[in-house]
Image (cartoon, rainbow, N blue to C red):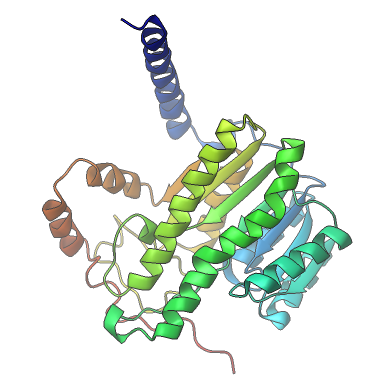
Length: 309
């Protein structure tokens, strides 16, 4: 018998028991009871900062004393966010950047390093949705969805993670989706892109772990539909059980997860149950669940965010 393997197995069992107990405690305690890190003076870069969750998170970080770096393809919206956070007394730097363009991301990242310095917290928030069934989805929109929702995470993280690793301090927050955990009818390209975001976050976390860089954190956020206009027209069959989330609540949960270094965040909380059942029940049963809970019909009346005039 390999004594080393026996000891390793025992240590694995003990760590499993310990982390399970800690995980249960953290899950049931209110976030306000958990230790929260101080982000005053830290440089926070938010993609998709020109509207919606990106703008709201910028305001929250400004209220906590952070220095903001705002990225968005929409110059007018981004400058509007910059003005709001300046009124909060925050230092802010805004950049117009197309998140579907790898070269533009790298060039803007270099400009940020020159203008501002190293980023402490990177929030990969920018995202787009087509909202069409697969065979009706134009190739160009499929490519754009993957570029913004998945590929951009690679290029932004490649740009700013090395400095975090060098200092053994930093945080990468990837805003994915519950559509990155479950397949939804009418969201084939979006689901694929968000599955990519979830897989990227998990692999990145493990790569950081094996380097022993315990001060660098990652958080993967997987919400249900959020009422920001991006999913205008979507429906939920059981709004009490599985509600479309109000953006204020979404930002509150994302901020709590970031400040407490939560590894993965799903909301509403019933998504944790569905996620667990997915690993236990037969695929055919989960297909029945999808029909019953409306995952096959929720996008039928999808309109999306109205185009800007």
